[in-house]
Length: 358
Image 1 (tube, one colour):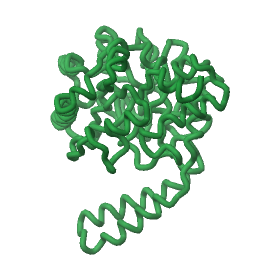
Image 2 (cartoon, one colour):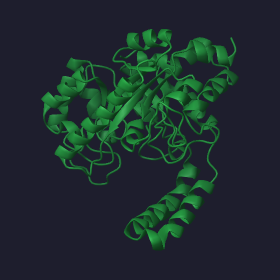
Image 3 (cartoon, one colour):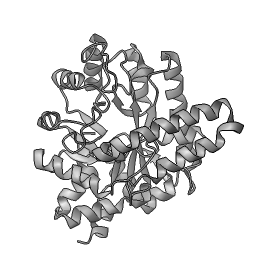
């Protein structure tokens, strides 16, 4: 089979897109857009059959605001489903996705990035489940009521909180996937200890190839795979390549500083913001082949049944060179073929491994 044939035969699933952020900004993803990385047209061009749209909330927001914003993001996804019923439909099971592919429709799954909207109320978890949410990323860039984040130096719980243990048990009962992306190493091992079901990391990379706290160590990958879990490789260049991560950090800081100044006085600081953005975009980005390097590394540790793709599209500032948006997704299949992966293994990596857990 050719790479094109394998890609078309596979059910290609991206386990993490932050596209609801774009929806809340008024972007119509039913049409081709020059904004963001994802729309229904480019998904079709990229042969992407299914995606988890993540309902992102910030750890900086108060609990009631987290819940409101998650519901608002959810409503925006339902608006897309209502506006384009001939192109896309909600999916909650693997069988839904396979059925929709046969119908020529894109399957949209729902995830929640950060358990903030639940706060300490399990009835809200059950409500989001009934509305279609099928995984929850336990936290994001800060500690919350559930667990600690990998992004904070000071830890609140030194792992998972007492409420977090209750949440894990209820997610297991409901059949919701537990997403360990963004959580601290201590929290990760707590989750494995408390969960009766396999867990996933919907958008992470390998710390052995890019040593940043956001990525997973070899031991974590092995431990997660031993319980049947899957790591979905993130496309963010700063998680793929350590040198890029070091080089881009001061440019991001400069851009954010310029953005703050611009927000305070657009007339004076527009030029500064433009220059900061140009410097950021001018930095050479690692190739999309680096994604497959991370896939290779996972396969070398635990085999081809425990890895997939979770782009983080629409939630990342930059993409790897050669994979600028979701329409370029076939290059992953081409590279996997070039490296000698079998058609069966490629089908698993492109979506089958993650779908197995739904």
